[in-house]
Every structure is written in C-alpha cells, then in structure tokens.
Image 1 (cartoon, rainbow, N blue to C red):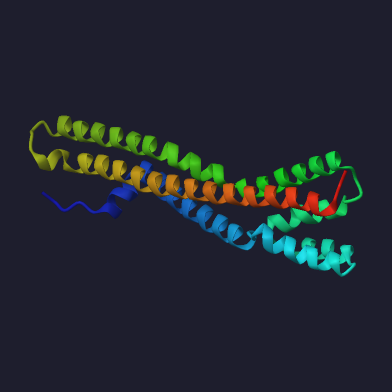
Image 2 (cartoon, rainbow, N blue to C red):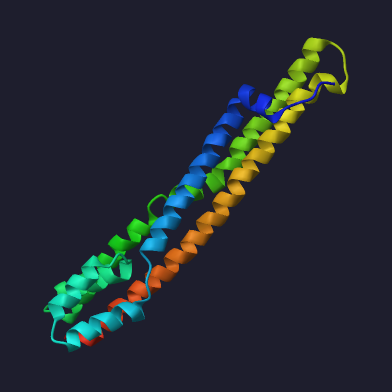
Length: 204
C-alpha cells in the first residue's frame, strides 16, 4: 500500500482547499479584531478622571478635544456627551446611547465571520467526508477486488476532511466567544462612562 500524503490529498480535494481558505480567513479576522480591540479599549475611570481634570481647570472644550483624539470607544462616547452637554438629561442620554451603539457596531465588525465559520466548518468537513467515502466505494467498484489499498485513499480523504472541519471550527468558535466577551466588557465601560458623565455634567 502506497504512502498517502496530506499535500497530495489537498491538491485533489476541493473540500480541503475550501477548508484551507477558511482557516486562513479565520486567522486573518482574528488578528485584525485583536489589533482593533487592543487599540480601542480603556477604563471608564481613567477617561473620566482626565475629563474631570480638564473641567476643573475651566477647560471643558479641551476635555472634549482630548476625548476626540483618544482612540478608545469610551472616550468617543464621552466626547459626544461633552459636545452635547447643554442639552436636557433625556436628550443627552439618548444621544450618548446612540453613540454607544455606533461604537459597538465597530467592535462587532467581522465578528459574524468567526461565528459563521465556527458553525459551518464542521458541515463542510462532513461534506468532504461523504465525498471521500463515495470515492472509496467508487475505487472499490472499479477495481473489482477487495483489500485496504483500494479504498485507502478515499478513506484518508474522508478522515482528513473531518479533521480539517474541526480544526477550523473549534478555534473560530473559541475566538468568537473570546471577542464577544471582550465586547461585553467594552459595552459595560461605555455604559458606566455615559451614566457617570451625565451626573458630572448635572444635566436636568
């Protein structure tokens, strides 16, 4: 029985080519989202402490300008609140909530890709498994004789397709849950900053 190489199977199996592409896509999205989360997170207490310092110095415009330049989502929500500080409490709450939703959408960008890959990759792998089994029986029928060497290649393709589906799906699902957890923390920080800023401004 000849030796079976994974690269050889990859060159002959369209399903495995798809799985390779999906694995690269998953890694790319994960790295892009990690870099984005890394650059746009900050604690609400730190942002509000800097804003309070500017406001106590009689420079509310400087506080808004500082927040606008800050890369964090919390700072952007606070900056939007400072820009509309003269409005009523109800209007200010609604405006800051709308800004919070806008910033949240930026964090959610591309995350559905990871969620989708985590869900569909096992099914694509299963499809490849079925194709491999079909090939194994086809080779067996064509040879007219039994023996493991006849069906080995088809069975190998089936098993590799199953493994490839899991190798893509499991990391994608883990990464999706990880980023959703971080998104929840960022959302809480923005909500806390919004509530505390409204109290600081004394909006009525």
